[in-house]
Amino acid sequence: MTDAREPGQPKPWWERLLNATAITAAVTVLGAGVLGNWIAATVQNRSKERELALLAYREYLNAELTVVKNAYQLLGGYLSASENLIFMTGPAFHSRNYTGDQLKQLEAQKQEMRKEHNTLDAQWRRERASLGLLMSYYHEGRKEIGQAWRNVEVTAGQYNLCATQWSSTHPEATEEELRPAPCQKQRDAAQEAIELLNQLLESARTYMWEGWGVVRKRVPSLLPAANPPQRK
Image 1 (cartoon, helix red, strand yellow):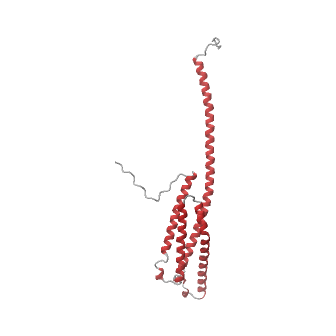
Image 2 (cartoon, helix red, strand yellow; image 1 turned 180 degrees about the horizontal axis):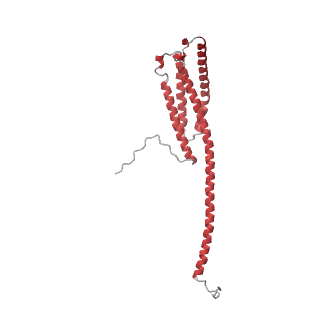
Image 3 (spheres, helix red, strand yellow; image 1 turned 120 degrees about the vertical axis):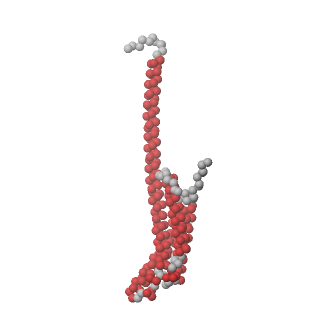
């Protein structure tokens, strides 16, 4: 069909509408393509950032767990060796109850236990400060963890001192003397300090997860919950 309009005559309204609609559709398609590419790139970048954050978090967590593991292994050995000093004063280790080869075996066992205690005591004194510094380093901003570790140091040292003094003043304690557990007060204080440190470490680890954006988990507060408002 030929265009019967004379030169200079305006196009009919329906033709102008079709041209405008086509242009709008083209712009819309182009814009949608650009927007889609931008969204895809943004999602991909965020995914990569999250992967990098997760990798960094895992490395950080592994280092922190190594520090905590070393600290607890040394602490456990130190407390156990201190406890052995008290255990050795009981009737089962009284030299007068043995003769001959049994006595030799007993003395060798006691000597080995004392040697183990001295080794762990020296290691504890040598490494406790550096472990405390590492605890603080891997929990920056959580001063209460450093303080909790110092409390562990003090209470563990007090228990060891009490056990050492007991073994010196009671080399062959009687059942009656051992019945109220020697140094129990110091032992309980050390255990309480360790339990508090455990709670603080768990709390710090959870909030660190949130800081890295790895998880969205909340630790129950150690404080009593507030009473909910009463409905009127």
